[in-house]
Amino acid sequence: TFNPPADSILWRPDFLLGAATAAYQIEGAAQEDGRLPSIWDTFSATPGKVLHGDTGEIACDHYHRWESDIDLLASLNVDAYRLSIAWPRVMDEAGRPNEAGLAFYRKLLQRLKGKGIRTSVTLYHWDLPQHLEDEGGWCNRATAYRFAEYADLVSRELAGLVDFWSTLNEPWCSAMLGYGTGHHAPGRSDLRAANAAMHHLLLGHGLALRALRRNDPASSKGIVVNVGRGTTDGPTRDDERAAELFELQHNDWVLDPLLRGQYPARLYEELWPGARPDIAEGDMAIIGAPLDFIGINYYFRTNVRSDGAGGYVEVPLADVERTQMGWEVYPDGLSDLLVAFDRRYPNLPPVYITENGMASDDAVIDGAVVDDQRIAFLNRHLAAVDEAVRAGVDVRGYYIWSFLDNFEWAFGYERRFGIVHVDYTTQQRTPKRSAELVRDFLARRRERG
Ligand code: GBH
Image (cartoon, rainbow, N blue to C red; front, top):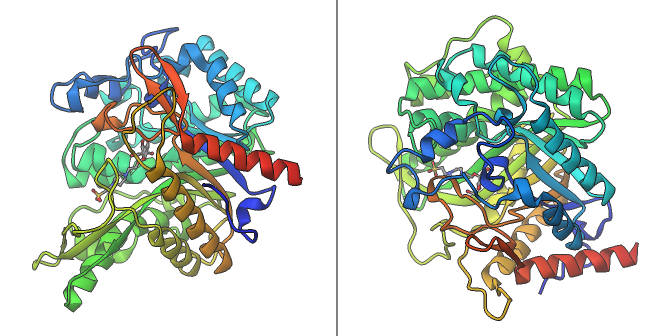
């Protein structure tokens, strides 16, 4: 069941409960209406990069099914929907607007508005135009300025249709997985490149924020970051330190520049000497400009121990509950991190949980999908949000990742995060039991007024 306690923040009509997606993961139509290739088209077409050789070529075919998809979303009674705009759809190589691409997002947002669904739009959910990667991608400082131009264009075109703008989704993943480990597009593995990419992503964020403020003053503006909980089961002080380094590397690396206007000193003094990026005069002030909100994506906890050489290694815990991704179900990590951020950053803006959810591969039987593990997962993580709220953290909304099963990046279509099941042969959508319970809860909340 899905029945939050009477004192849960979920019952408040102004607490937003929604679902999230991202352009490359659902849209398909990769070559239609003037869409340029992105780094994910290139990466997924490269053998060995994505499980089973899956690509986003068709995905959920949302580019053609957007009307019925929004109707389905609206039937779940959600307050809000988080989506992303594909940069390569809306701008050509010379930086001129692509009207067909813009028209798609305009009608999509208008339909959402018409249904009374609040819109939360991310400008960059990992699909960099390939031609910019060919010029160095995020390692090239110029990309930050191209991103600001894109933000300027889109916010002029779509002003008034967006309630919440996010500049970037998870810059840590773009920088580290894209340029540091090579698990994501563009698939480079060089720690210095990852640090340069992070700096230019954050600079791009700050520059884009200025454009958004100029063009769409009434909307709320922020950024979405992924955060990780690092703990240790090791006995030594070095193991404790390893867990701290894990969080330093995942969380502080991104949050400190955004909320304190500086990179954590230990990052380049202890963890990665030699990887410090070039920082121009004035950059940190642009990056650290005030935000209207911060989006937090939380999934799991990582257990680490000291590697004996001043760093950390992951040591997976036995006998813990895991999801289809192999990720540990650990709701305490969400409340612990929210409280820790609230204490560390006195200027922490209002928080939205912009992603939380899990993958499971439940069968469709007689037109129904019983995803009991997901239902328990959502209940427990929402209880963790309540706990953080009780501890004083200003959390204002929660988006389930994801609305639909979709292209799960390097894991392709095998991993299913949706509260709505997608049959990739027929493109049939089937709301899972979790979606029905959310729908029923929101209907009850609306009745109470
Ligand atoms: C999000 O990424 C994405 O925004 C979304 O598009 C995606 O579909 C969804 O989550 C589900 O994956 O322990 O050092 O190996 C979350 C990406 C993956 C980031 C795990 C942190 C672990 C880093 N997270 N990753 S590490």
